[in-house]
Length: 295
Image (cartoon, rainbow, N blue to C red):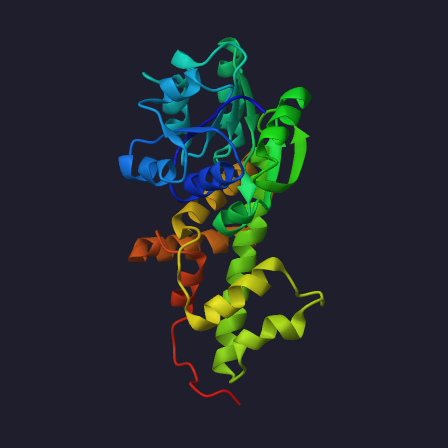
């Protein structure tokens, strides 16, 4: 483990990763343009950095948790960015969800500047970050990924190197196709159960261990049934990821009719002002008369 780890991006997901790292003994230096987000991690024991360059200068590895390729590029290669302060050979671990194409370009530019790059997008969200049980899919040189896995072992229970730069991000897009369709299927099934007078909150227990069982079914059907919209993710982030999958599908000539429909439903909800809400708000798409009493 390096003496200190830098974290750039302390939003909902970055904040959860940072909190877990600090709680498990990591010396963490944090930079985010929002002082309140930095202060939340400082209160837990992290230290604040005045810039991305300063955070990198005091650390042997840098974790990125950002929201778009342009933001990642600015944080690493822009004024006051990681490249200005990082020592040669510094390992950059990008836990953002961005396109494989952008990642390949970023990794190549990092190499030109003497920096190492691993893409390590995640699945499991804030709840799994809090318990150190994230699933990470990674791309990069074998030795670099092995080093990243050692650093991230405190936040992840499953880490898999999928190939070179961008392979982790490609795998994340596939993950998001499965998740997006899964969320939508469970929301639709919840609406049907409630309309038919069945207690949807009991269905996960009834189906546990069967072919229809899944982590999404177990976690989200009770939340869908209760209209529990507490935020652990964002609908508009799913739009971004499904659009990324659509871009990859076009490049590879892959037909994805169900994913296209799923993306449009998420886009409709975003246009209706629900983009910042959790996937549980998919139930707003299925509004209609629901039976108050279950048969």
